[in-house]
Length: 463
Image (cartoon, rainbow, N blue to C red):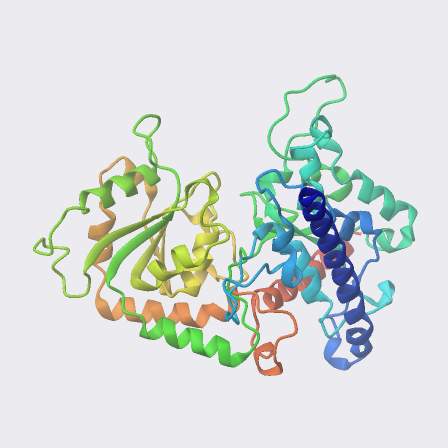
């Protein structure tokens, strides 16, 4: 009897949550769309395409079972995808899951001041398609062997429902969000003669010719990106007022940096296999584990500890920012070695903490997040050490970092604190004063509008 009651309660809670999401998502559209005729909206008008709920909200109804990596994903839907608060008194910190970027980006866009209900007047058209959530049935479910058709259902709808909206610019003015790396959606399409093909990880959404003109905002782009642009990974920091942001930045500025460098992540623990930079980092940090403060490095008055490692293997840090944010606040440098793919969420966690990022290849950030982290300014807030020098030539990360003058470190940290508002996603419904500061969402929208404008000009010139 108790089991039945628990199951019923869970189901009821889920239904109520979904209904709340539906009403909350629909209501802002009415109020924010009123100002689209303002002259301030010239070149900035966005139309949100109305899609059947099977492409977005319906995908959330199976949150208790649709994601095989978690027993119950439903709690992460709280606060429109920001997740539950880290603790009851928290006002800016949430257990945010990056897979829900599509949901809270959609929620934020409903507050955008230049929404227009008329697609023919729009400078860009947003597709509220939760692509990464829909991809789960192709990655783990019964549609695994059909992952090459991911997205065709959406295209069929766009061709059948007011097709003139898509055909106006052949999709060049459309964009959507992908809460994953572009690699996850770049599986090669099977050839016509292939009856059976060995399935690789991911789906073929970005390989479909039907969507070649679509602009995609993803968490990581490919090296030869045409369709996609990388935007910051969501962190757990989502302030709702300027006071909360300023309070955090003040804490970052005053934080005592007692550790020279730290690494938060997994991998690099195996002593076998090919050499890699994560293993080199762990070995270098391990060498300082038993060092006394009398050593030439550890005796420096700036640092009580040379290296700190926060093991985040098996996703144990994913929804627990306290586990790694405190060590980041105490470290001067945060090491950002590539993992399965070059880019890392930890890069943005570290920036939020004022921990100077140390990159080992350009693809980790410099060639990825140009809108939010301008490549020309990279040397002002980060350090780059070629991974080949560390892995094969014995270059010590400690030696490089200790060679940076203190005044330069202070300047880099000041630059990082300027970047904090630009890489965070503020909470929906935030104060007017905080909305005056551009966050990661605002910069992504500006970049998308300019990208689409440039694309349309190029198409017009060719025509």
